[in-house]
Image (cartoon, rainbow, N blue to C red; front, side, top):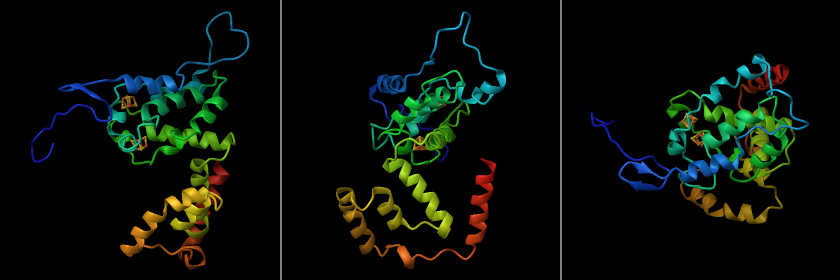
Amino acid sequence: SEGGTIQVEPMNNMPVIKDLVTDMAPFWSKIRQIQPWLQTEGPPPTAEYTASPKSMSHLSGVMSCIMCGVCVSDCTVLDIDKTFVGPAALAKAYRFVADPRDAAASQRLNSLNQAGGMWDCTRCMECIQVCPKGVGPMDRIMALRAKGLAEKVPATCGSRHAEVFSDIIKHKGILDEPMLAIRTFGLKNIGRLFGMIPMVLQSVLKGKVPLSGPLHRPISGIHHIQRLFKQVRKKR
Ligand code: SF4
Ligand code: SF4
């Protein structure tokens, strides 16, 4: 509400059928896309597939998703890119990737490594704020990325962006944006780099050209940042 007025409107990022009624078909289609069922290997057990409570307890949060679609409605990426699989489907994908009984984690991660998958989230945190069940979809997406990197999924622009971003921060403590783009796309990806020319020109016109390369110096407290990196690595 703004100024005491409550605004009631249909969910965003879904076709409106009438008044407040939206068509959830695109939502379910994205959920189906991640194959939301357990995929095991070997002969089936004589009773149910079991897993220890300890190995499953970390999934209780994500399993409380009620498929309400609110995170999808508020996702800022889906607003501009309908091919993004979205927060609800990615949280559901994590639920199976992290299930010790599932044998398809590698295939799932490779599929989510493609365009429209886990790397397309911009970490705006909207889905975390609006989820009524505390599922934390964005956190699950970050966990999927970490699992993807640990599994050494083939390098894509998404995975390279994450690795280069972290490398630049580790060495400089502050982002070198032109270098991030060049190292993410690669110098051979002329088409993609040319595609950025309008944005670069706009930045020049607005006087917002960040320093890059040797002109981009590390911050004075860089040793604190590097210590943090070392501590995180030790904990892994
Ligand atoms: S954090 Fe990612 S998935 Fe969640 S709303 Fe933002 S862009 Fe969408
Ligand atoms: S908002 Fe939360 S409960 Fe609703 S679909 Fe998204 S993750 Fe599930």
